[in-house]
Length: 264
Image (tube, rainbow, N blue to C red; front, side, top):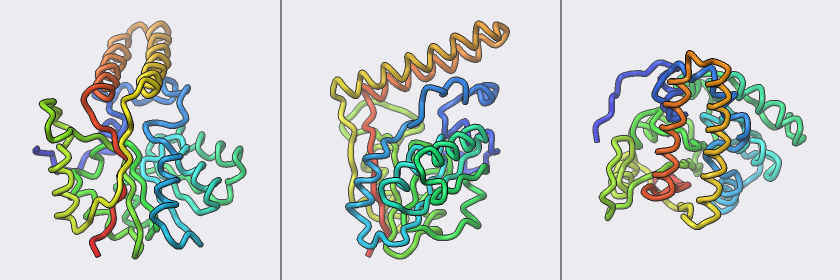
């Protein structure tokens, strides 16, 4: 697959992370996603993987890139009593994250910042755990992403990436997704190993969750269409794109939470 390696604007980066095609939708995302706290990733899966792969949990520092509304950081801080830094480009999401941290009693452990994660990582320091929760190819492909984030990873640290890939025996094609074997090759070429993963099942409960999420999203798009009829096309296009993505998640894409570590 070929990817544009030119530096995208912050707006374009957010569009990539939120799987949007039209930048005009950006101001409305907080409204459209008001029924969501967890956006794309399961905090409990992340927590279990951290507990499994981080031996020394004292003074644990976690970096949550593209943190959305802070569900991952707040839950990790609450359960593991550790420092979490969350960064996202959408200011409303960061405000919401800070409120949830206070609500959960972990305001002292969580720090949330508005900014472009590609710029913030240059000065944010080193962490034991770096999380990219369902944000897509914001840094580039896997080789580019891991090469960039390597300097932010402490010795013995791990990256946890929630993303989708295409099974090697599948005939499904998507220009934004890699096959499992290509994904593993890029990880290896970056000097790292895929040491563990949790693949989401396609059982009825997961399908029902996807349907509920889409129904909430679609309802908010319809409300916006009624309020701003001159922008109906924007909301309809976004809703249709999300419907296609949910259908692919249910039928074609393997959704995986992957643990990646430097080669020993």
